[in-house]
Length: 318
Image (cartoon, rainbow, N blue to C red):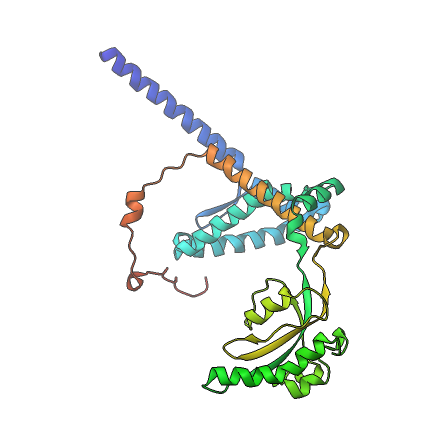
């Protein structure tokens, strides 16, 4: 038993000796050029800074000037540590973000730069997402409008019906102006819609199934009509009474490949970039174990009044 104890002591002494020797060798090899407070400027550090500053002209770097700059930097670092900047959570966050930025650049951004897309990739993606490039049926419409005024709805409807009867008769007899003119001059006398009545009732282009902050009932009727030039029966809404006419239309279609090629390429790049990021995240999760305590998470209940921010360190020069 005693022999084992002595053996253990002897082994510990040998390890301490080896550690001391290695430390002495390390201290000897690093060759300190200058000590500034708690920091050192080693020969290795100085040479690395020379190469960084000088590049291919490293031999022309003024060593005295560089040393003065590095000493100034160490003085500032001494002051930063002395006032506790290294312990501020905001500083630690910035440092962590910097590290994360470097990781993302090396493992994500560099891969993203190497993304290539062939013409076949573009065409295949276009075909597989064709519906997203559909253009709905569009119609240019004209309206006639009379506002609701009377509390006697039935009587008012009869009056409006009598007024619109002439327009409907003209339509049935194909005597209205050509469709591209809407209701023509009749809109002046048969409509109270101030925006459109002096231009044949024209409202402009509308897409089928578009949800607009306007009279949906009128738009639905406009797209229920069959042909260019068709005119509706009276449409009653909460606001008033309408007739609607189709002035022109653009058929539903799919946008041509050449028209959307740049958009397709952009979307493929975005998808591939997203995949690179997700693959890297999966790799990290398989490499590093994650343990979560939901109980501890539930215990957290921070009230607004208890929020504490970092205390600012005292200002002042060195």
